[in-house]
Image (spheres, rainbow, N blue to C red):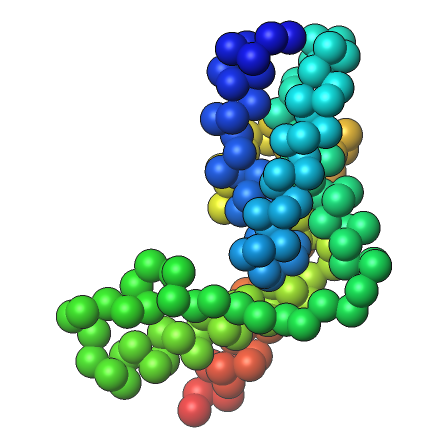
Length: 172
């Protein structure tokens, strides 16, 4: 694989890889370092990349593994940057609405962080990166039915905990 083919096949997915790394690490600098590490490893092994069915799936798996290694290597400090989220600084919203939205975003981040790793990973691939079920199957090695079940359970768990936390069931 030469430089032109590498740029054509690998560089278009670097945004997805970065967002995935940021999901796991919650730190922009570490996510950037992880992305550079993945790209370097892919470039170093570019001669073997043609033997893989999906280089994108390989890159996602590499990103995930490097992130998990980094998380195991040190205790991370959870930081969330809500200013990058659309709508949090909405000009039309009142200060009360902005505060409420910001609180909801923080709550969702916390609830997503509390999901089991597999549910969080599949939820991110499907709902954030908008991967198809076939693409998720390639990345994870799980069957499509299993992916659907995991995704459904993750969404249900988020929904239940969000409602419980906000006391909507109690009618307050």
